[in-house]
Image (cartoon, rainbow, N blue to C red; front, side, top):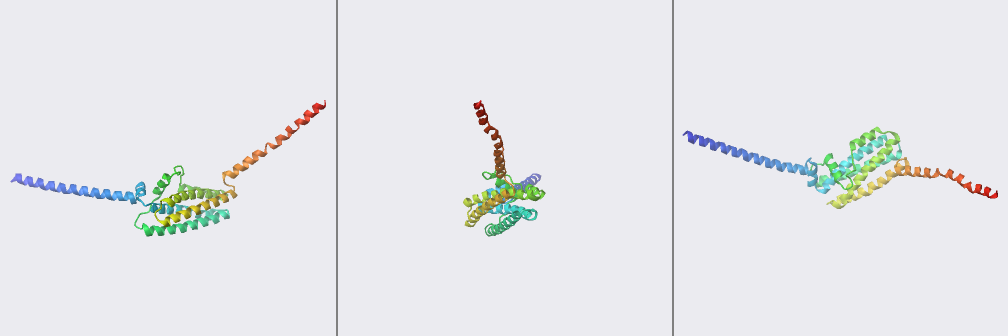
Length: 249
């Protein structure tokens, strides 16, 4: 009797252990599947980039990039001292605001169920782009420098920082003109390249007018250096006269 009872107890315990083990395995498998999904669409940077459609990737990066540009532009409207800087800042901020509205419309239409990329993921992608390994972008540090600058120094720093910012947007958009799947995104990317290249040229002109830019300063230094030796050539011109006097003796 006791032996049979012990056997039944052991059999029941083994059955319970088997059920527990099966539950654990099932939960682990579900967790693994969920974790994989999170890597592709959640907050794990490289996983999301690997699993995201290129168009969604470009939309999220451009929206976040534009948000940073708009923040700098709004600050320049407040702190800028040159009218050209303030006018440009308002124009580029308004343009980027309209771009973001268009991109959010596309995102809602095509990818409403997908989570948005975060800042760490955007930075990881920027550093992986060809030619950007040494091109760093620290928006927080840039804003601190801009907030600390005053007067014309602020105007030039804003133009330099926004030019750098635009160049990164141009590179992202050039990539999208060949990799995007939707015609609307390709058209948007082409438009962005053209528009922001034009704004880079405009910022360079304003910066030069404010005395910024190394090329103009270097040209002035070279021109000044070339003028300095000119007075030294006059004594050399008197030597033939001395030789002529000796010939008379």
